[in-house]
Length: 206
Image 1 (cartoon, helix red, strand yellow):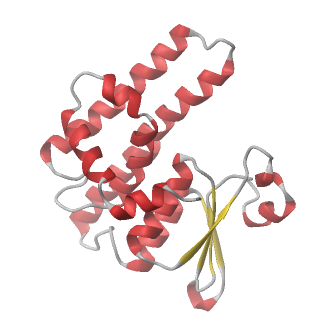
Image 2 (cartoon, helix red, strand yellow):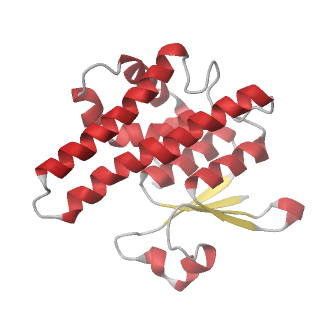
């Protein structure tokens, strides 16, 4: 059994979507970020950084419990543990890892910048917000070009890269809808939203 400690953020949703997609048995525990539960001693024992998500796999390597933080690390661990959504063949695996890292190092941070800059000043600085929005859209345009070549981010099969991207795209739905072009990304987002495992994962924690 895996315990998932999470909240309704894109980072948290990546972990819950992956758990739903792999079918690994898990229990979800809501971490109340607004009240500072992530800074409580009990949570800091799981992740000293005080951030969600965290999983505790009670059947980890050697049968011993294993705690893992960071949504990307969690996704990689679950893919390896389940043998799903991360190919073992060299070229296919490299393509998935490349797309996965594009999401985590380019697209997701650009989305996060929009959030943090919206909170930095009151009211938000319009030029700064415009810069962040345009940078985020440029990252989405790169993803759209990938999806013009293949149905999924890394090729012909869905992978951890797709599961990693979807929560960010869903959180920025308004920006995506008002943007010009990005038709392949729009098509992909609709396909992802229609998947039952993705829908269940997005609803965690209830």
